[in-house]
Length: 266
Image (cartoon, rainbow, N blue to C red):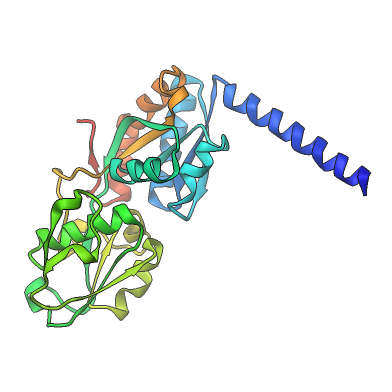
């Protein structure tokens, strides 16, 4: 038994050393993304980085919004690219992660979708509305419902509102909070769903083509390239940013998101 314990301790130590070496590699970046079209987009950036800057990008996919910052904090990643500033600030506040944004990527508009109505003025009283349940995207969805004229919000909490902050709900909408990844799957079971662009695209839903209402280029919710604070001046990330902002990635974003992805750095 003692031999087994010593063996696993040795393996863990070696893996830890390997991880440290990976983090210090000036020609490699382990980049966390959310599965779907954003990952496909970063695969284009990966090719550009290798071709133009001899920079190897290892893409690590996640399906849960709560995991990429945890992985970046514990050293499993060098950077991640999936979140907007409100989400990042909330994670830093709640978990104490020493993370910092170093560049803007794209705005992927959140939008309101339905398979039951064609226009918002067709919405009946007591209609069911599904929104994301993580704090920052829940607030983002509520703000979009407010902009669409469906509810009025008490905005004293700024960018972290909940359904409890709805002050007027003329149609008495039934707000249901669900995991963001589940929203496209329940679209047929509710009257409206407010869906993040990456999950919407997986269901072949796009703001410009299918949405009843969506964010525009004035949205504050640009996705960010995020690193540990100790890495914010690391020169290898400069070339990653150049690759992400390249014409090839712009063209791929236009294709993958059917014209709805907005470059936030321009």
